[in-house]
Length: 407
Image (tube, rainbow, N blue to C red; front, side, top):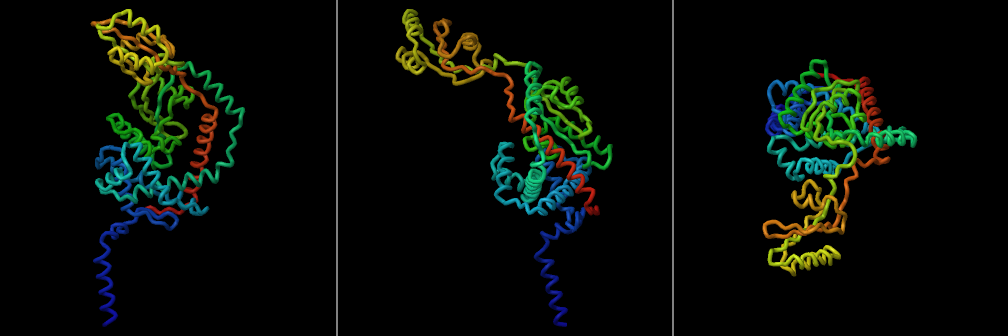
């Protein structure tokens, strides 16, 4: 009897002290090589997605997202298991640094993002688990495949020459989301979810936030930003879409052999340099009508340096202002007109209007050089693209060989 009473007491104790953790194991969503993904894990990750992307949490979208999220969690389990196999461990400070970077990208502080998660009833460990898997997988991929990738000088030079030829072509400021077809069970699910994402993005939802949550492209960690590119640098199907887009538009889902793309066009401009983007540091000296024109002409002819001109202008009771380096298109109209063709150290002829005579002095000038092309950046891009392909192939192999049981 004494033993029975002790067992009963122990059972009661567990029931009393463990209600919070009981939710963690109340249901199993999947088992991945003997490691469990709980229904609670899925619920939390779904909540994290909606909270960080800003997409409306409708019942229909939530149900669609659950399967997508579960497949992502299965992939993360496989990635962590593979990283653990080669003894890769991610330290807490690495996760905190990554969280701080994400917070900065969203104009938050690290404490601010933690408060945001608490407000949304999302455990901090939900985000940390996602970051841990990302960092571990990146380390594994670079350690395992980085040494196999050789980017030759001839290949870099060929890409460089193509980029130089494209300088005079229209440039597009593009961001991308690449959806992994392996993460969807049917083509209908691809169509539904990609269509819903496009709809939400068109309504103003943050493109970078969705890219970080969904995209499998190397640009995902930068919010999908590809930067300024010519259409010829894109997949032909994507190039055709981009050429038809206007700044501010989101593309429809674009299926390719590598996955389904969603593109955002932030801006576009003609090739070559743009004079309106030349930067000028202008000293504007506004003389009142009490200062005679002869004295103003002497002030102009005596110009040596901007610092001296600034001091001399104040002695003459002029209103002196310095713009600092600003693009020509950002300067006031009269100022831009006066200095557009001046070099650093040159002074525009005095202009009198409404009893005020303005003298514009260019203290510094930096011209827009158009798109700057770097061989190092070209090499980095080739490397990133190749290692991304190798990583995706390896993950497909892991899925094929894994024992995954969905409940």
